[in-house]
Length: 200
Image (cartoon, rainbow, N blue to C red; front, side):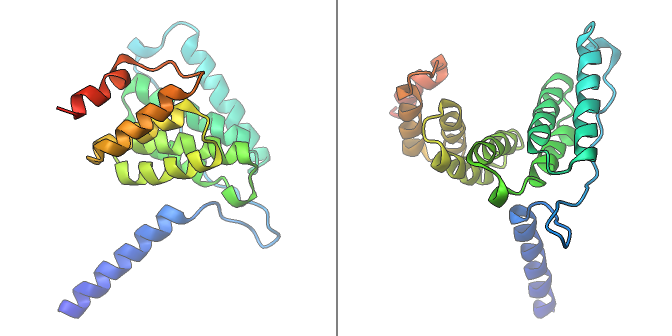
């Protein structure tokens, strides 16, 4: 019985590790295989603000058609992931849109993407993982992103949040200091006063 339980646990662990580190599926000729594109859910009538909802639907169709025509269009994947993030915030449909955003990003082959695409993919993924409260994965992903571009304030914000939620307060303060040292950064009062609260 113990052996069976151990095998089940190892199988689960292996599947979890594979799902965390696998990316897009490729065809034998090295091209990316077409994948199912997550759906855009209909909004509650109270959330259909004038022309805004119509524009969102049009953008969704535009990005979907681009990916159907060319599964290797990483710009369309990033734009679609951002659309899903915005819809999650507007509608509260987190259970659908955050996993959908991750699914779209998972189909970007980071090893073949340029530096800008890799950074934006990892940054967007880190933000989604924070929203899903997967703080350890968010921290790991944000660290990969900052290794590519250490001059982006937003990614340090993700590092602050992830470290804070994991109880790594000294690291969170260090990341907050780096964030506010970037000239283009406009920090929120919460980040500016963060160090004072953690020192008490």
